[in-house]
Length: 142
Image 1 (tube, rainbow, N blue to C red):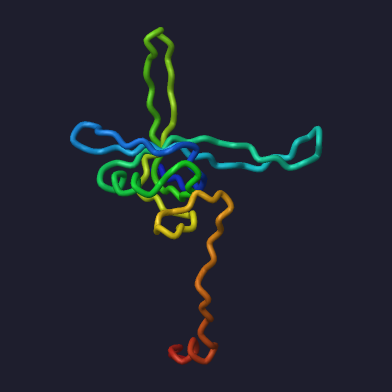
Image 2 (image 1 turned 135 degrees about the vertical axis):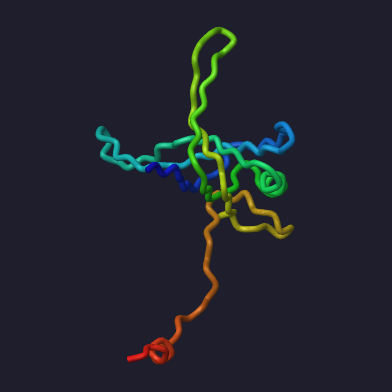
């Protein structure tokens, strides 16, 4: 059995590209996901970027194209797809892309309702208190 599932969060490195692909629309995204690595020479932690091409097909891609832009933070869930081609010079090339099943906004929204470009926006959950212990134990049958 094989499982082909990937989840990444990162920022868009350029504006999305929406294009016609046969009978469907295709949105192409490029995101950067950073790893942390300790530099052996300086003994300091450094960010190491990883770049991924993301494909979003159909109406979902069309909708996302109106709200996403360079710098937007997104969470992507999908599957990996490997492709291979030959350049006009005869060189073989290959790459791994993420075919997205779901793309979620992680950036805060600006006053116009669109996701903001701020790279240091953070999510603050609504202030909700947990139910009391008495409420939780009322439904226990023993």
